[in-house]
Length: 303
Image (cartoon, rainbow, N blue to C red; front, side, top):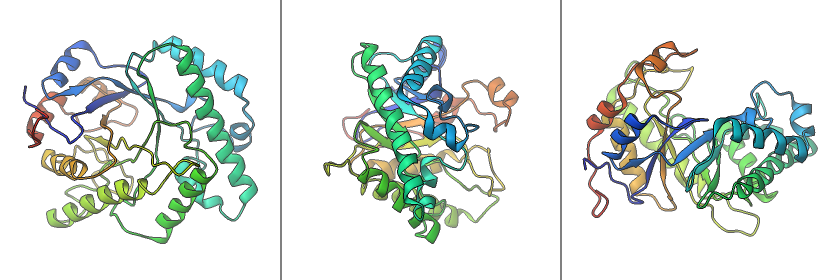
């Protein structure tokens, strides 16, 4: 066992709407990483990027249930003991945008209710699969500032997340997923500046997520999402691979945090060919070799 260790001893790999091939699963296992997570695209819950505001709000439980049930059957999802992450990102009304509607409370409440409806239906559909050990989570809660700053934009975003909690959006979730994707690379700033930005954004993502609660005041466990690439249209290194030592540094920050149930490393691709031929290609990496470069992180008992 090479062992990339965490305080939770639980790192998982997630693709979108599918599982890794056996060869990659076996390679991941050498690092103590399991394939017991799957991210479900918005089209499974009538939450795709293209859906209009009216249709998103108006979708009822029956049609959402039918859509999700058919989607899970088609894709043979989920498996026992999976973390199931709902990726709902309709354009301009995704969870990160809820704070932008704070001056239109009626619309904000309707959007939150639409998310709450989908989460409730997803919980019911997963229960009907009779798969043991399933846990349900939500992507994009929270998205920190890329540099970890407490900007006016970020604070408005947080007010939206907090309002969603007060209206029960998280009540039927087992966990939420702060998105710790790195937003900048070596062409954007000097190494020490990049380290400061990544550290600050990672800590902000965790610490501010911990301020969210269910309506009864209980804290929600966190499953932070990390990735192998920079994701930001504002970066000169958008879709380039991050530095392995930078990912290792993020893992250490997560290890030192409270409230972490597991860590998920997300990817839409598992092979070099998929990375190269994607609609929006990313820098090609061999995942196992990349993880080997990240190295073993010291955490007693988790190797």
